[in-house]
Amino acid sequence: SVNDDPMFALWWLAGLRGLRRGELCGLKWCDIDLDRGVLVIERNRTTAGYQVVEGDPKIPAGRRAVALDKRTVQILRIHRRYQQEQKADAAENGKPWFDTGYVFVRPDGRPINPNYATTRFRILVRRAGLPPVRLHDLRHGAASPAHEAGADLKTLQDLLGHSSILVTADTYTSVLPQIQRRCAA
Image 1: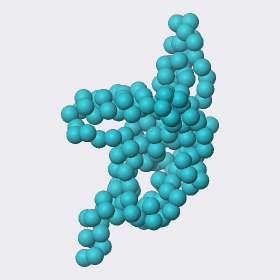
Image 2: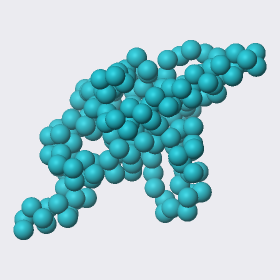
Image 3: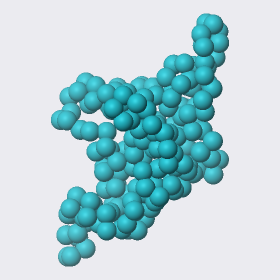
Image 4: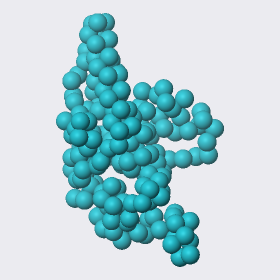
C-alpha cells in the first residue's frame, strides 16, 4: 500500500499541495516550519541525463510559501520521525549516515535521485493496478480539489508557482469543466 511506502509524504505533497518533482527532491527540513504549517520552496533538484542538478526553482514564481494543513503537518512529522529512526539504525549498525538536511533521502541520508521518485511512483501505480499515471499528474490533480474547496485561479497560481495566471487558466480551465458548468448555470 502507498500509505506504508517510505516516500508516502512525497506522494502526499505532490498530490495535495501540487509540488513539482524537483521541488520535492530539493526540499530541506530548514524550509519547513511545522509549528506554523508552512513550507518554502527555495531550490529545485532535477536531472540532466544521469547528472543531478540543483539550483533555483524552475521559474522565479516557483520560489514561494506553501500553506500546510494539519494532516499534512502530521504526515511530515511522522516522516521526520521515520528519518530519525533511519539515522539511529545506521549508527547502531555502524553504517554511514550523511546529515544532508533533505526531507527525502536514501537509507544513508543522502538525497534521493529525482529519477528514483519517478521510477518508484511508476512501480506503485503498476502494483495498484491503476492506468498509467505520471508523477507530474499528481501536481495537476492537486489543482482540482483546491479549486473545488474554493481556491480561485490566483490562489492556484500561487500554490503551483506558475509564472502567470494565464498558465494556470490555460492548464486548469480545461480540467475543471464541472465547475465551469456550475458557474455558468
